Length: 365
Ligand SMILES: Nc1nc2c(c(=O)[nH]1)N[C@H]1C(S)=C(S)[C@@H](COP(=O)(O)O)O[C@H]1N2
Ligand SMILES: [Mo]
Image: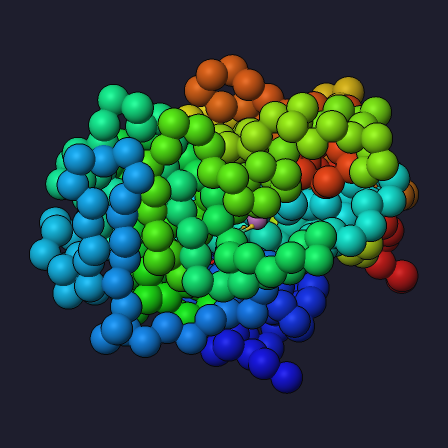
């Protein structure tokens, strides 16, 4: 079994390619997820990269194409950003329970983690390459291959040039104080804070400036959001919205589903995150299906691109109870109540209230 330096406690959704994430009781243990617990999302096998021979190529709609070794990259100013990465498929399992979603990973809540990423700003490279007026999108291609529709090709995706020019978009070579591990894209990956994880391309080898988004399968076809009425047979793939910025989300990490709890005041805790660096301004929990809400305490944080830890207390009476959480961000956006409102056949962007069923019972006397 391949473990990639990962903790044995990880929930493994697939071995080949390796896809795994931290169980709920470890997800929120530390603000910076220990790297051995950080979730992994791979579409193909992790490639081996020769660090000495490695060159990053940057071309397309630029006046000055670049070809850079890792040492060349090290000459640009070094920046560190604490950022949470979340897969667009996080919490797909709840969508699957509502209506089946074949051929996609049934993630629980574990496809989310936080690290301190270090590397160089993509903006600094772009300044050296000087994009032409025709450049509107920045496309990334990794070195890993994957197969879809009978074709083998490299993983890729793109972001708008406007997003790429922000200083927090990194080409990262370090993760929480260590060289970027191979399983997380080492030696070099993109980090697009506040956007779906899919755009943070690992094993980065090529950057192309373009007038249009990337033609890669994972930009052109996958990672699009369709209405609930669309299905794999009838869908017009081009009609879906290309996913980018994350929606506002929140998760209950404790208690866990099916927990048995004593009646009375009960501590509830979890994490919340919004897209685009928007601050989480309120988190609320309910134990009565949304009839009443208790406001959670937010842990102080100055990390704009990272999740927010919260905790709350609910007074629980005996019986089967459903706990739920919703967060609000600085744009006054909040989360839809039900899975039915967000269901889509690819299983992306589930930001419905996160619900956890528990049994509350007095201890036997
Ligand atoms: N080259 C490459 N980059 C990739 C992927 C991939 O399969 N190949 N998966 C993407 C997806 S869908 C996510 S959610 C993140 C996960 O990053 P992690 O494995 O470091 O957590 O990487 C993204 N970058
Ligand atoms: Mo993802």
